Image 1 (cartoon, rainbow, N blue to C red):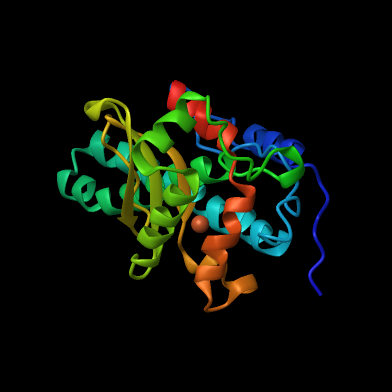
Image 2: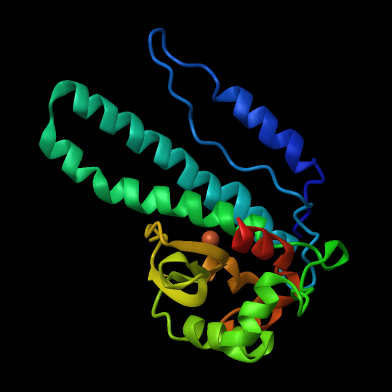
Length: 230
Ligand SMILES: [Fe+2]
């Protein structure tokens, strides 16, 4: 049976950061590390199980971090050696693992346990709440529209509720395939939603619609408000 490690994530993340602190003489290069989490791995239950979060954070996200660091090291080496063809070949690894790193950092931060405010939608008088109601009529309508986009993702991908700075700070919903992230500087991700099977399958199996419905109970709208007003 699965047993959840109770080691505080903050301590684990600090240890990881220290373990990657060594840099070669003459080179100052900071390696990417897993972000510190604000909650325990099982704190999002019953909506997202501790087992899923344990694997998602410690295995999947960790792999993106490690492979991003490797790809960067290889790219730096290829650049120093003038190996243009190798640099080009590394773009896919940089895009996939860099996107995986960024997307999951957004993901963990825009989740929160219910007892810490997860699922508590923006108040009607907040800037984000006002914009949502103005465009979508209600937050429930925005959630339904996002779930419709999520349902339309074929294979693995992400959905993002974004602030469109180029269009008067309106709120859009965009999706990406695989680990592609939002790179348009005019689009600010407010909520990032992981539609990969590794995010839900152990708990929801093939009924991903139930996962998309349940996860709104642990969405950190306070973080979305902060990103919207930033
Ligand atoms: Fe994921």
